[in-house]
Image 1 (spheres, rainbow, N blue to C red):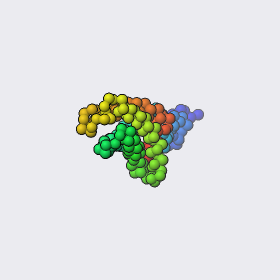
Image 2 (image 1 turned 180 degrees about the horizontal axis):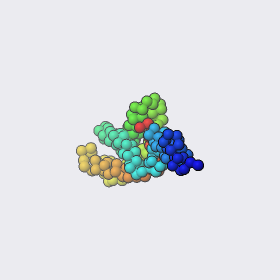
Image 3 (image 1 turned 90 degrees about the horizontal axis):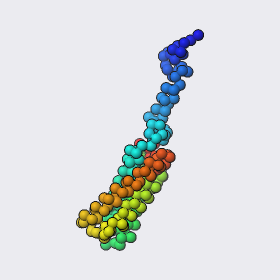
Image 4 (image 1 turned 60 degrees about the vertical axis):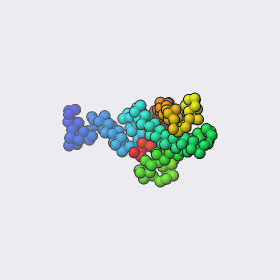
Length: 192
């Protein structure tokens, strides 16, 4: 009758050939999923858990594109002497454009077509950008005189920096929740 040791080494010493070591084989299979990024659960935190670091990185990525568009919109609107409403609308439009463009740039490198990359960007960033824009534009409207301050004032840039910090703090938990459910920025992970 074969011993437990004999059963494990059956098949020339390959632990996967024997039946006694299925746990290691299952772990190896999961590790293979992570290495190939074939499953979101494997990528999302080595066991399905979404970390705060992962959510913060996704938020920072999104905030970078939004900030570029937002600042550009504020600068253009102010330089052209537009009203606060016109300036905010332009800033929001450009925040979406640059937010999506930043994500698309990354996934286009993975070989996706423009339409596929656009679909990924829309799925990855829309909720995040909406939350961000509500918070940072809301802060700019609440801070007294911030929207009417010139581009050469500390008030304008200080309020804008504060607005971005608040947007980051509010949007990070939203992204953590979305990524944990395989949504939001989680759809980009397969292409990194």
